Length: 95
Image 1 (cartoon, one colour):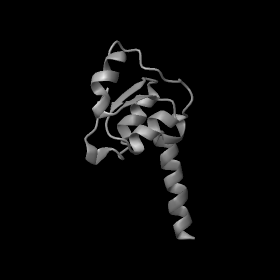
Image 2 (cartoon, one colour):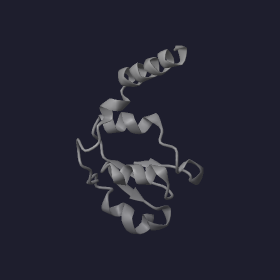
Image 3 (cartoon, rainbow, N blue to C red):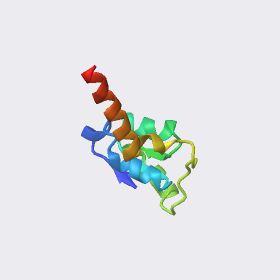
Image 4 (cartoon, helix red, strand yellow):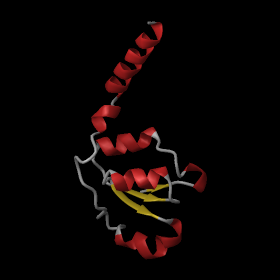
């Protein structure tokens, strides 16, 4: 379960990619923004708006958070892949 304040509703932190790598469904409570959209569009779990917590949160507190494992390819965000992309970009700057 992840709670984000309004100011961070668009902050997709590296913690998400760690969670996704373990194939753990995400239960996100926060305002509508990039985080909620990212979770929904990639079938990574559930987004609950703060004003709907009383109604929606109890449905998922038993751990049954729907998510589609394998839908989102987290490999593109592994340290080695990001490093490779960075090195290619740096080499491109030198040319």
